[in-house]
Length: 440
Image (tube, rainbow, N blue to C red; front, side, top):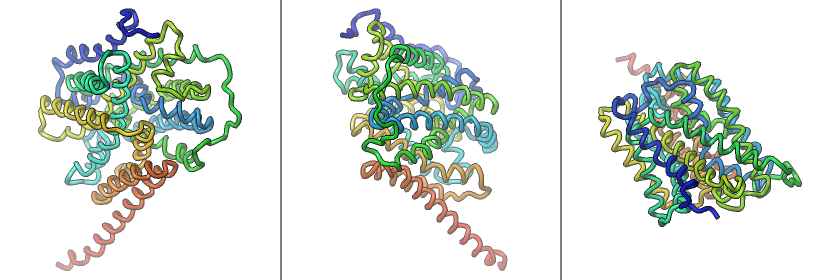
């Protein structure tokens, strides 16, 4: 049995936990406010690729791919391919996003919607988007706490506090610049870990009776995977920020196109484990059991890197929305710590992990109407964006608890309908008021 007190195995775990903090302390000395918020818009190709790998392979990825692959081969494979397709789409639209963000003078998804729609109260847009991504971050935090509770002699609550502190402190010190730079080391750990996992489990074919069996799920869920999962990659605030803050539009495009096959390799490796029936236990247990005996510690190290790298690049794009405020660097750092404290409380109260993952991904598609309007229309409506985002998120979250097969469809339908009605009513009101203004 793995012993965390074996220094040869416990050493790498200590290193991967503390290395980002040490690096943040070294790099933060001369950092500016712009460095902290969006790396001053100069993230290079390697850091962008690493960030894409880290940001798109999280706890939810492992859990969803393992469980769905075990329940339905076609669903697991479709999910993996749809994830990767979303990154290819990001590569295709990255130059447009980069240019549009520069045009509005913003660096994040929330700010683009606010600026394009001329929303007077940015919190009305920030809250629904932040809720979805803080939910996803809380899933990562809960998973990291579970790992620490397994390898350290501490209670579950103490492990949750430690998990929040390990990630929150280095993120608060170094901000987005350190988050992007530490992703390079963390991405290497992830790719090496999954590479070893793949080589170890490459032999033997899984027993599949019917490749197209949907198991306990229904056809609408499979259709939703292909329709909405690629879109969710585009609408993820971390991916959006990578497109907007890369050194140049071409850098953003190349990074996503190069990262897509790397991520697809990782996704299909996880699906392979699920198809072999390794989905009945906790993810950490599965990875330890499927690693070579002498490399069991690599499962811990890999998952810690996965979780820490995902959390920092989920939280920082939410702070980017404060770029045009007068908050100082120290105040922004304090806000990051406050967000991680809120996340710890949310994670402690969180329900079933799979439902939380599905809820977060189902809610992403409700951003689409407001984002498309910001990118494609000349006169988007502020009220339409606010209502669309808030009602869409609420409906998708409620539907996850009722019938997850239709949650994404319902949330997107309500968001699109609400935006369309709001835009139509605003346009009609404007046209009917025009003669009155002309007659004065």
